Image (cartoon, rainbow, N blue to C red; front, side, top):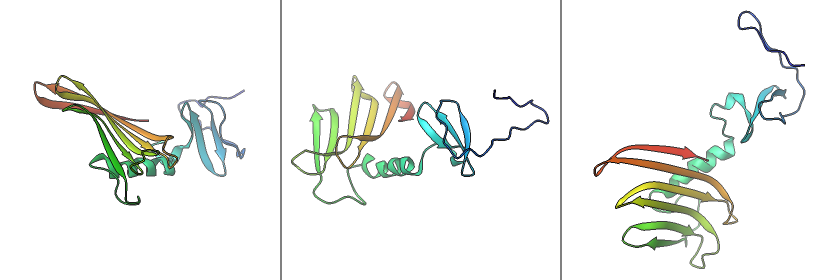
Amino acid sequence: MSRTPDPIGDSLELPEIGLDPVLVGEITLNAGEIKARDVYGTFNLRSGSGLTPSAHETLRQLIHFIDNGPAEGFTSGAYREITGTAFPSAIIWWTDSGKTDKIVEKLITYTGAFPTTIQWKMYDTDGSTVLATVTDAITYSGAFETSRTRTIA
């Protein structure tokens, strides 16, 4: 049975088992790295944010799109499609005008004339698998934005 360390003067020693944790809430020692598992998967406790290097890179790459479309590291010929009325509800960048593979998508939800939710979805090279989703929830006081909460999934 597992044991819980006492708060004073006790330590918990993890034996090297050479396996990543399988159960949510489990912590193991694998190749000298302390690993934990939560509902999102297994991660190294020393990595800080819990993001894998590839997940971090995906989010960093998303910044190339947030302003106005693909830039560094992408081939030319990308095609932008804007849908909605005077207030765009979706802006999608495709790999080309044939619109077969999405690169990034920006979805906008309005309350009146004000955008209250903006969501970016970054797609894998297959054009359909979402690699990362960043969602901003925006609040206003009158016509002025007062706060923005960002979630990353």
